[in-house]
Length: 159
Image (tube, rainbow, N blue to C red; front, side, top):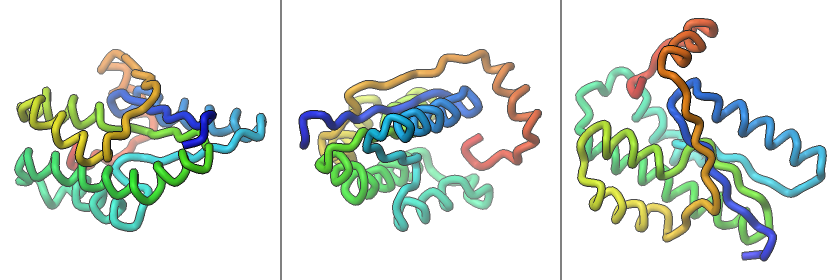
């Protein structure tokens, strides 16, 4: 990896502002003419986007928690190999709108999967790549509901 490459992730619940801030950072990097790459999770590759469709589809409400965790991790592995590692090797700043911390929060604390098991899967799925810095957006849950209502977005399976 080039010495000036950096991997940054943005974490927080839906409507916490992480996507907005990711895009603001991208705009600033563009103005500064700094090489960068933005990726969302799950997604970012053909395979990862198909996994995203499965994970978010309301027709899969009976999905087992471990299946869910493994699908998120599989999508992450694909985007790491196809997009993130190559961008870092090119010396780009990589910005991830979510990464492994979301799995720890939602599938670990939320669904009750062993945090040790999740940590092991993280190592495999990320190919031992972890963000250099993570920005966590802590926001009142009621505020996220107000924000969701303002945009009238339909909820997906995860929400």
